[in-house]
Amino acid sequence: MPKVKLKKQKKYDFNYKTTIKVRDINYGGHLSNDSLVGLLHEARIDLLKQMGFGELNLGDQKTGIIMTDLVVNFRNQGYMHDEITIQSQIDEISSVGFRVFHQILKEETLIGLAEIGIVCFNYQDNQIADVPEVFLQTLEQFQKDC
Image: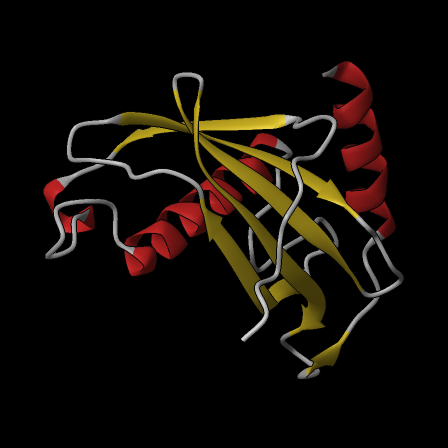
């Protein structure tokens, strides 16, 4: 099966720091893939919170998000008690969604790269929605300030 090779982004605007815990370790003694997905979720929630939003409200009180796809490339192992930083960047914005790019670091060591597809969703109407203008304006200002 061909491997999807992710590339580092030129810039990451958001940082989320955490520690790998015992629950994040697999039987091989290192960071498990399912735990990394959970840590990326935590980083995404923190990213949205930094901008004043949440996964169920991108600023217009009706539009949330749904994850559509995820790709992870592990480059190194992470171990229990490692302090890691998940750096994130929102890019490739379309009318109804965007992509979140992540790099996972332990100090200067690259643990992995991840890319997540996001679609905006109106949970009240149960349908795909446009990216709210307030979200786009806030993101633009946040990226300028970084």
